[in-house]
Length: 262
Ligand code: SF4
Ligand code: SF4
Image (spheres, rainbow, N blue to C red):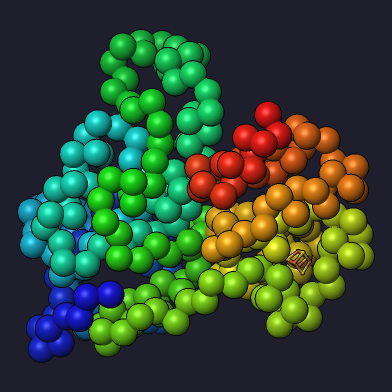
């Protein structure tokens, strides 16, 4: 990440595109740390937390939630990038297009007609895409929603001018660390943990459920091997397709794997 001037309180803007607001709420949910944070950064734009007049920047740090889903958002993300020294994204929508990226696999106009009485008034793009498809992104924080501790680590790293200590490891590592019995081994339950980026603390396997990949693919995710295993335990092509085509359907590794099962 870009090294900042540590003498001044950095001007921070929090922005939202197509999303449910859950990742921004994670920032507000930092209850114990929020006052401390407020003393270290100057949040000049955060509609979810207040309703200030929208400043035009410049921003030292732009925190962006949501996917690019409308022509207006496309213009806005480019403008925000041009007014920000560092830009990080929060969550599955901003890093992979979110659940709304399911339309990337279908006919956008048919969807619009089915959902809206007057589709001609709806200005939306045919695809929902991650912020990084349109502008350079300095760091993508994963999750649906993101994990509070990872968010605090990201902001702390920014304030100290170092890289965030967020490892590219799979959910399986978190399972092992918390001593959770593997649901694949114990119950033959399908689980995307081996190919999914860590960060949630392996919540789902702790409740005897398979991971459904809401943190998106880790780097070098061996999706083909996992799909072969799913087939071996009796899952149909359609079930395998649906496993990879969910909250992070637009992430290239999961998109490619789901297309192999169409
Ligand atoms: S339950 Fe899933 S995430 Fe946990 S170790 Fe098994 S395969 Fe990995
Ligand atoms: S275990 Fe998987 S699906 Fe469950 S919260 Fe973690 S990353 Fe998301």
